[in-house]
Length: 623
Image 1: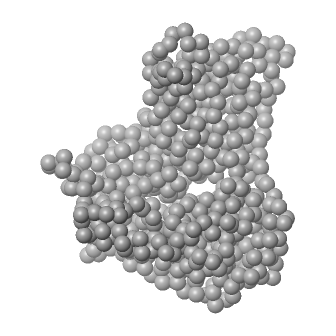
Image 2 (image 1 turned 120 degrees about the vertical axis):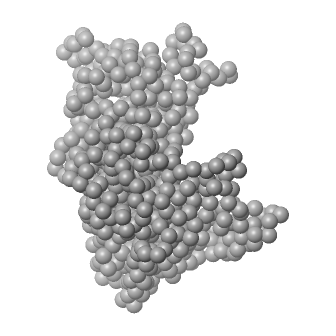
Image 3 (image 1 turned 30 degrees about the horizontal axis):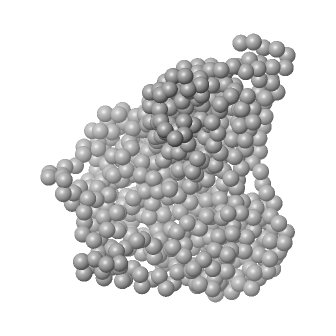
């Protein structure tokens, strides 16, 4: 290593890692590295150079060994969520399939606006050894490769073809990762030869830098116009999205709602913005919502949407609201703030709610409107109590959720994704503390559950080591991606995993049946290519990866098993069978647009299509 007064000679890989290890952020008065480390699987495309650089910074940037590149990305997403996008992890994978395995997790991070740095191997810039192992050749364009596939699913993309490029590219990538409006995954393709090439980097490039996440003040005219619209509202409602937590604006949201006596409903990403017991929390809204929230959504005349991208599960494919309802959208991203002809307030949620509250001083929603919403919430609470009760009914997701909800501590984190569990958790979970629920439904990725839980636990252990990360997963998602049980045991990052086995992909079977189709290829019992279905011994499987595991017959036994899991010092898997039919939460649904056959030889399919389409008259056409 050649060091001069103003420059230091490093390989490209060494320079990337040195730069990352010197980037910090201040969180709650504590200075810490903005990059918490990384997840890595080495191959020929990253082991020799990037691996050499990482070896020397194991304390500063701990590297967690992954079992699957896709799950590494999910773990990085779970980590970023737990840190409220204030910190991120990198993922490093080899050229070829190792890198392409990260595509799905990059898409998840992109859809959810989550920071994740991807440091991926690439083919040789010189092309002297072409074609190399695992190279994807394109006869018409030799510059095109697998890494170009990341362009649609990343917010920042670059291929480093010269060591000097990183002087511009790394700060640009980091700025993307920390930007509240443009936040998402950043991708750096690292050709195998360029990783090892040297350059005399200016020493100033590696000086310690303390970052902050920008808070963009809203435009005063937009705030004034929004306040004027709110002042006319007779039936106002607030939709609280995940952006409320990322802005650390929970207190401002609560204060705004209380000052103006406005009912609040939550999106899936916005679950745990308010405690279940708060009198203005009317419940989750949308397709997987609550009767209480959906009923007031249908009647609201002015809707203040804060930190939400208004995904179709929130809007009931835009049938959940009155056609003449007006939207005020508070969002750091102008793309989201302008949706469906909303009156946009582009800016940070904390600053925007404070400004809007001051401008709307003196306004309060009519007491009879808020009282009606609260009465509906009380009715929904009673329905949830019936859902989670157990006795002579078949085992259900809701019953298991109720047991865990009763026994967990307020700061325990709940993680789930895909299948039927997002709907069941969203509808039936009663929030015990702020920011403790991660229902991954932005990209609805099967397999996120255990991997995302592992990433969340890594983050959680740094600040709340005495709390637990509780993963709820179905048998279908478990079979798709379960290897991070082993990761959690290896790294001593304990998870409590509740595996609810319904014999296949039961929620899609439900959709199949609800649209008039016969059960086919979803439940194992209905697969024509499966002559003799059998149940996996999930307990033995989990135990083979080092976890403690047990199987319970039902919710009556689940409580004691969960207490044993809480007392355990390592990952603990509890298996319980649930019914595939007639065990779903029936209330709380809004219409959801799915493609149904316009013609069919089946009377049931034709009838279901007509019934499904009957709700389309309520759909807002972009206005």
